[in-house]
Every structure is written in structure tokens, then in C-alpha cells.
View 1 (tube, rainbow, N blue to C red):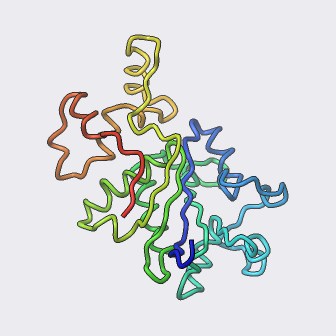
View 2 (tube, helix red, strand yellow):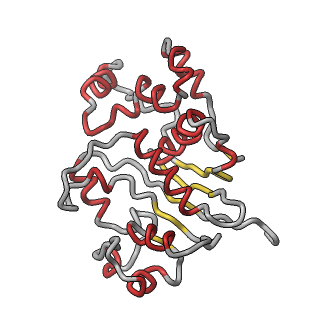
Length: 232
């Protein structure tokens, strides 16, 4: 469309399951957002990567990965509106960086998404568009429904468009087990999958000022509604 507004795009990937799955995910600089050539996938862009190396990796696509995003942001007063940013929220939970991994928490991923949006949104208009499949949308919804409201900020001032697909907006249930499998998952938190249960979903989608309203599963389902996309 002629004259359409160009905004930076932030990619937020989906669920990686256990530590082994997380370790596999973080070896891909693009977090699965594209099928990069093997030579690119096998090399991580870190905060020590030179500007020229980063440029060779990202010049044609403006896809900025990992530490390269911080370097680019620090060295530019404005951000190209046609840039793509990868939210690498699983990095701190991986064992492959030589540091003690941090337990993954969806609210922390949403807070880090706000920080990334601040960096990538330093362009005319400041707002960003977010593209998120699967569980990535729950991270995004936590940002716009809880993190920003808790800070007293209007999500529409930060996020222009949110495109999601294949997202478990209503949680995940099983046809078998008469609810036993869901209760076991939510009680044990196996592989972090309790984020798809009603209690955790309510926690990370509800602003602090409304957490006292927690009630039955029916209230939870009404709270989620049928929303599958959001645009400001």
C-alpha cells in the first residue's frame, strides 16, 4: 500500500519446552524466524562482535540478532523503520552461554520485550509492530495487558500492531484424562507448561490492581474472551 507507515518489526518466538529445547533454540541467531544459511546459524552474534562482522551477517535483511541489536542501538540515534528485531528471551535460560541459567518466567520475558521495543522503536513514530506465533503471543499479551498497564502506560503508545497465529489464547486442554493431565501439569509445572493453565494465565494477563478479582474458571474464560489479535 502506497504511503503505508513503516515500523520496526519485533519477532517473538514460541514455546521451546525443557532445557534441551531451549539450548537448541538459542543456537539459531534468528530464533527460528527464518531458515538462515548454515554458516549464519552456527555463529552467534555477541556483544563482542565487530560492526563489520555484524553488517555482513545482517546487511541485506536488517535482521538484528542478539548482542548485535544492542550494539546497533547504541551506535545509532535513530532506527531504520524497516528493521526486524528478534526477542531472544530464552537466552538467559540456556546452559550454553557459560553462565548459570535463569528459570524462565513469562512476565520477565514480557518485561524484556518492553526493553527491546524501546531500543527498536527509536524511529519516527517510536511504535513497533510485533509478530508472534504460538506461546510468543502470550508474552506479547502479557506486555500489553499487564506490564504496560501496571506502569500506567497506554499499550497503543508502544505497540502499533500485534499479529499472532497458532496461539493458545484459551490455554491448552487435553481430550483424554478428564482434567487430570491438566491438573498434573499445572501443579508440577513440568517443562514450564503450567503457563498454559488457567491460574498462571490469569496471573500474567491481569494487571496487579485487578488480581484480587481472581475467581472461578468461568471468570477466567470470560476474562480471556475470544481476542486473537490486537491493533492500536
